[in-house]
Length: 410
Image (cartoon, rainbow, N blue to C red):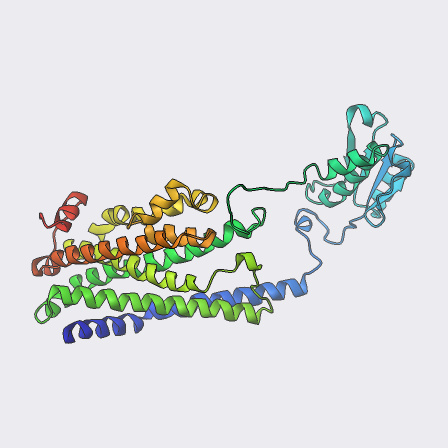
């Protein structure tokens, strides 16, 4: 136990005092602060700028446009076009104001508009973005004029469907049309995946570096392989949690300093027990993948030899990200349940489901039990790969050699 504690303490001190770790821990929040400050400065000094000005030769060109109505549809329209579109009786006067710089462009609604729908748009330069806002106002005026005799039909054209969903089974109270229905579980899943992957990947890097620097030979003279593996798993897990806490705290501070809040509707509030599930699935998921990558690091002579096998090992955890749309939209479907119970994909898939809907307690409990059993087996299997010969020298390995070593056949 004392030697495991020695490995744990040494590993934490080695990582947190490393320049790359400190820079990553500090620079990411710092860059975020600078980006928010820079955006605030730009908005403060250039609030009147628009994207369309990028395509024009003169940023001070007037935004007012004109129109000539030969069809007579807009004579009695009730849509307010003042400040956006100016009415002209003929093209000559509109063209004169265009050349004088009083308007930026003008529309010509043809006499046969009802039959053909043709409207001509004249402007002195090529700027497709500048006309979008004013064109929408003209379009609305034309629609209202075409349907002036039937107000109900005009209303249906503007709002063709008032959809009310009725579910025969109990569903989440979240509004499916709200963008947060998808992006809240997506964000939580992506964050959880990044924390597990970054923390467990440090195990492979740590063992490979110590083997190349021949530090491993010194450690093996006084520490047993199982003690070394256990100490490193705990240490790197604590470092990963530290990194997550610092970045999460910096994010909340950034919101406060920017004068914004992150207030979600009640239906999108994650329950308090979600934090407990988050920690449980992180510990178990991280322990499984850290032990697998640790065993791989012990087996191969350097990190380059492990690059191809690493993707195969991490593939089950990546699979829920590839199917995240199905997990969020159909969290109780058979595929979603299977992925959330299968131990190698369970951490990411179950967190996605919990963020999207209420998962039955027995499913979450069963997933934890399966994860705990798998964690115990993978740590024991990886410890078998932590033999002195592997840790000191290693061997060229492929995916077959790795799995044979994992089951104790190599």
